[in-house]
Amino acid sequence: MGSWELAVGVLTKAVEAGVGEFVVCGGARNAVLLEVLAKMEAAGKVRVWSHFEERSAGFFALGRTMETARPCAVVVTSGTAVAELLPAAVEAFYQAKPLVLITADRPAEARGSGAPQAVEQVGIFTEYASCDLDSWEGKAPLHLNVELGEEFEIGGEDFAELAVGDFSVDYGKPNVAGLARWLREPSMRGLVVMVGELDVSEQEEVYHFCEDLAVPVVAEGTSGLRELLQHLAVVDADVVLKENPPSKVLRLGGVPSGRFWRDLEELPKVDVFSVCRNGLRGLAREAIVLPGTLDRILAALGEMEEQGDRQELLDGAEARGQRIEEMLESQPDSEAGWMRTLSVYASIGSSVYLGNSLPIREWNAYAQWERQVPVVRANRGANGIDGQISSWLGASADEENAWGIFGDLTALYDLAGLKMLAQVKCEGRVMAVINNGGGKIFSKVPRLEGMSDAAKSWMAAETPVDFASVAKAFGLDHLRVTRADEFDGVEDGGRAVLLEVVPG
Image 1 (cartoon, rainbow, N blue to C red):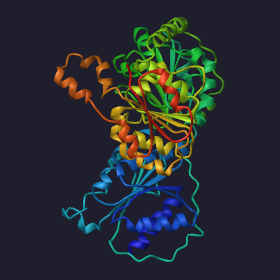
Image 2: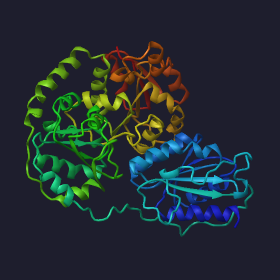
Image 3: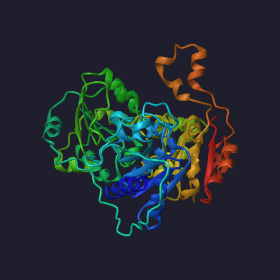
Image 4: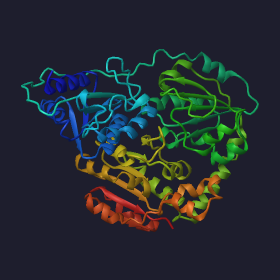
């Protein structure tokens, strides 16, 4: 079979399996794949995005799966271009997202030869991606490796009969008997519910479940319920729960970003039950896990009886919250104060994306409470800072007034992602970069306090970067602010702006 027929066959099967969007990075080996996609796009069958850098392209495709809940494929050439997709594959695996990796390869006889562009691509993503389209369930990435010759003749297909197939992930009928028993079991120090990242489709069931139980809740911004569940919130949860650990913790959704979740690894007497799509316990210790979507699982549980124990965790919440408010008011130009200000403006936008490390933690601790922010996204699967800008742009590509909040190191990791600004909606788009001169999160890790000054400086990785030049290079307006009263320039909702925040 010739290269054209191979390309048509693979891409047709991908579309029929539900892939309606493709992110392409050009190369000599995958040229035939791009030509087939050009025909499919011209026929109005698929949507194609173009990138020049494979790592960012993979994360942009991942962002599209966040927004659409459907597969998106990234198409690359052979060699190290394939290896550049590993970070996105890892993140998609732990998020349980249907990212599809279509990689052009040299013919099999080139393997092991050391010839140009010949690397071992078969199985390169190991357990992070399935390699069989027929058995793929959509709960993790799929890798389709296509051996192609360099020469090809363009065929006459018009793809008029091609249709994007239906796509859904079947978790089966949820068996909630174990969870129901676990919830009914009495406990001396009560239950706390920790709510991580949720799909929008899961939010209503989780909200009513927490309301019915009426137990203390720690809701991440990425749950979309943080503000709605304020009356049940454990304020300053990392400190309060470490000092007063409950008997049981129920985690709903993605892995929480707060410190107390990690502290649970040292608290074996706290019984942990996780309900999440990827079926992983999220801790390096024993815990019970029920895989599936929360809307179906909680609906199957039925109405829950109020437990309402550990009221003391909530009784002190108002006083703790007031102390935080007083701190923010007295230090408006601190990093915490800036996150409060950013959250007020960002909450009016269509969505918010939070970069890893400090931004997501500071949002959870200091963001405003008055207005619900139902769409808050992040890459918390593997918790790295790769591809954050690309994931934000992919997830919000069709949205106006979309906000992304990143640290300076996180932004530098993925500047290539800004190439996609020319292909996404930019009206009112704000990319906020908290420029604090490097990886300041490491200064907050207690176990690193005793390190030498040299080692600490290497950890911090100071970054004296001119973000005005970055903005100019990618066609963004630039606004640098050092005081809260300089912020008003971002309100016009016109061109996309890089908002550089320099905390005091």
